[in-house]
Image 1 (cartoon, rainbow, N blue to C red):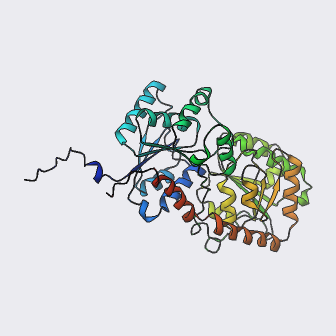
Image 2 (cartoon, rainbow, N blue to C red):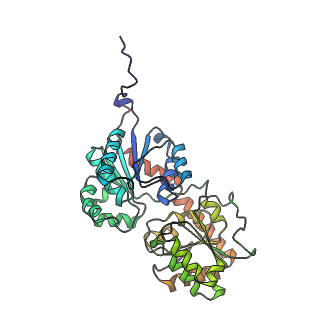
Length: 389
């Protein structure tokens, strides 16, 4: 006689879909969060059956991003690192990982999430631990640094988004066969220059040339250097408008630097957090990336997808991403960045458009999110149990 299963009785393991648990800092308007949401939204059909959960260490910084993950079926648990002592925080984190029972725990980024997320996975005996390390330099506290060799030995797969990061991991002792480079991908349906038209809202005159920056206002982005580079040029070699989109810890310093210079005050616009990057890029003629540290910057690939050429610093994988479709400058060098901006300004509109068209073709070939998502989820599939038997 068949025995009915109580509602409180968990289903047998064979009936439970494979589960991936992502450990993240927060639901914020950042490259890591938006890239993960895009990879989930574009996952191949065979990965749609996976159960997806996340743990965040800070309250959501963006309601839109939180809603986007929720709409994708990701169940989130907030364990607020800032509102509790470390012992209580880690106890709650470990309990939640055990309660989740994931087949794969995927720590997004390094530092706090990479250290405590992976450690909780090790203690909870999660079958497979994965880390997406997206920084060209090692980050974290002294405790994080001491834990890293131990955790790296117990991490089955590393998914950096740049070859330069992969090389750093190998120098630190991670075997090459545990590293899979998964570049940042772009949703070509969303970043579609023929569908997203500019309105000219940043232009005072129809022939103004608008340079844009979009990203987190963090010290490594060197927005201070960008402003200095522009201000060092003769006025005829400067962009008519420089629009800075984003927010972060350096925002007060950026506002102060702009306010201190009459020309910058007149020609630079700070618009705050950008929730519609394709629409922002459609309003620009080219993008400037002034970073001294990067992995594979989403902003560069997204600008290229929108047929916008870029002026970027020669960091990490940026030269191989941009190729011949933009202009490069030396990181941390005001004169070099100023020269690259002046060279971009010196091109005709038709020449900039031609570079942008080549950039779009390059993205279509190498950074289509559907292709990238297949690679991302295949790396997980190889670690997941086969419950089809």
